[in-house]
Amino acid sequence: MNRKFLLLSISLGLSVAAICLVIGCLYVFSSPNARLRFDLTAEKSNGVSERMLNAIASIDAPVRLTAFLYREDEKLTSYNSNVYMRAFDRLRLLIDDLEARTSGSFSSLIVDSNSPLVEQQRLQQLHSRQSGEVIILSTSDNHVVLKFEDLFEVSQAVDEQRIAARLRRERIDEAIGDAALRLSNANPFKVAVIKALADDVSIQPFLEFVERQGHTVSHVNSFSMVGDQDLVVVPGQLTPFTPLDFAAAKQWVDDDKHLFLALGAFTTTAVVDQWNQILAERGEHFEEGLLCEAIPIAGTFMEGRHECAILEINAGKISGQHKINEPLLKAKRSLLFAGTRPLTFGDSINKYSQSRLLRTSVGAWIDNDKQGVRFARDGNEKAGIHAIAIASAAWRPQSALRAGHLLLSGSDEIMREHLDYNKDWLATSIMFLLGDDLEKSGLRSINEIPFHPSREILGRIKSLTLYLLPGLCLLLSLIVWMRRK
Image 1 (cartoon, rainbow, N blue to C red):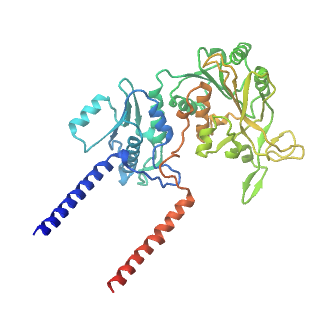
Image 2 (spheres, rainbow, N blue to C red):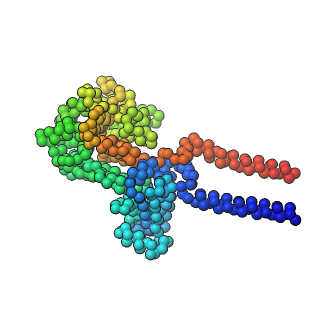
Image 3 (tube, one colour):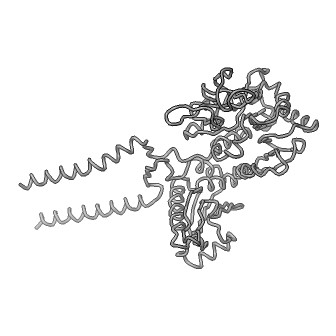
């Protein structure tokens, strides 16, 4: 009897201990912070990026993200469209990952049609929400609103052919990161962008891009109208300076104020000569000509095509010795420079540090349109490495905003037609020029996660899934069968 009671007591004790262990494990692992996350997507885009995390961490006050997941646009629900379903599933996943990877100063709340009606009305009145607003990122004294079109790119439904709307691309990480930067900048930097034309429509996306980085942007007509700004950006220039503007530009550079100057290969000689005069003491110079490189087609390199003037700047052409390029190299991104002129540097007084940021390949040449075949290398056009972006700064800065930060680019298309290909680099460049924290800049995809498999490792995982697991099951079945026999 005593033996049976002892066995029963041990069994009950082990059972209670096992139940307590299971309950404890479930309680611990129910917390998002305790979850182990694996991103097995090819582009590592299944979680939030380091850029978003750094932007939210830079906000001093507690941050709250409120998501209103309502299906309000009838055009996105017609013809059995699944746009809202896919978009909201993606939002929930990223919000969950964001809350898991941030500190306790961040919290989130998701509101949808299944939430209590009283709670829905209270939150909508609290945030003064309007139709179409999906995410409200707020602190105690400020907030930023993101609409559905800020987060997703959608193809509209076609009624005549009864084609449903489709989800084309997401911008969640970029949009929330930009919103966090705007919240973190209590005293935003002031950036002036000089107009190349009276009605410069092509630069509008760049202006919006700079604003989304948390800066105050003004679009001015001339250099003499810059005033009290922290940075001046010249995204190309069509006409020469007036004497007043030339004096203002020279004074700006001589005072070691910050400048981002981009002049493409088709900028007039008069404009280039004026800027070379202004930059003479800095020892930096815009050269004449259009840079070209042979392009690979069908296993060989071709010349004589206009694509030769569009330069792809991959990791081998990006200098790793300057902090502007560190995020770009880390993310393994390429840049696109079109209509590019070469730059030279080095002939200056020892007052400024100078760095070549980007260069061409050894096979690039300066195309001469006065003779020979356009976009093809002729006998008198020598191939070699050419600098296409240069950065410099004063060794002994006068102040944080008079540190002599200067960046020259041989292409102005990086801020216009090819802006989407160069946003990462432009963001870090502007941060460098302003003397701000480079960790907040760049529109990078996630690249540091608990498990970061390469494509080769993913292939091995698939092979293990296909062969190893069924093989183990077969082996176990064989062992059981032999034991029973």
